[in-house]
Length: 196
Picture 1 (cartoon, one colour):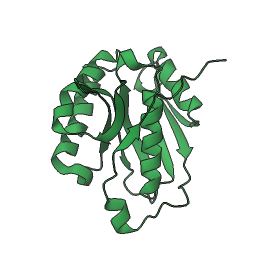
Picture 2 (cartoon, helix red, strand yellow):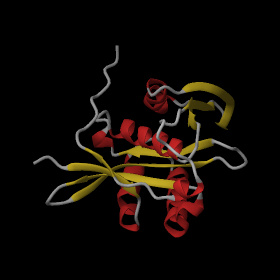
Picture 3 (cartoon, one colour):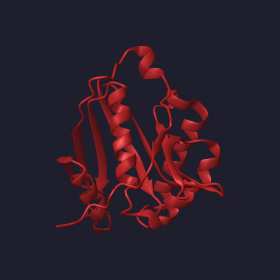
């Protein structure tokens, strides 16, 4: 029997699995990994009050469970309906298997459920981020800004945005926005996008 995949809120036991994913990604500096872990720790301590909504995709079988990837996003301070995608990372052995695509779609859906209408993503222009940039473009994100040499000489900050329409059944009453989401079951991996 193939394992079930679910997306659920990150818990303390997931921290080491996410750390492994971040370290194994190959494009995050030690400082970036430390920053990602700080946001996870804030989520674990304060939950939704941290402003960092943090979820994992987990593969579950009778024998074991494994964190396949994670996503961290939250409302942008001083805006009405804009959210920031702070982190998204997938186990390197699962790249191109639909995990990142599904986590990003989950973040968009959850943001819309909470009344969000636009998701912003910031990333590096470095060559090692070429696949990341293509991922966002294929997911419907538009390059809306570039700050030259933001991170360091030769490393620009790229800002992508996507407007997301809330489904007709989504309500944004205060109690609805505070309600924790139910676990999302992912029955089968999303098909891999082919590059034309």
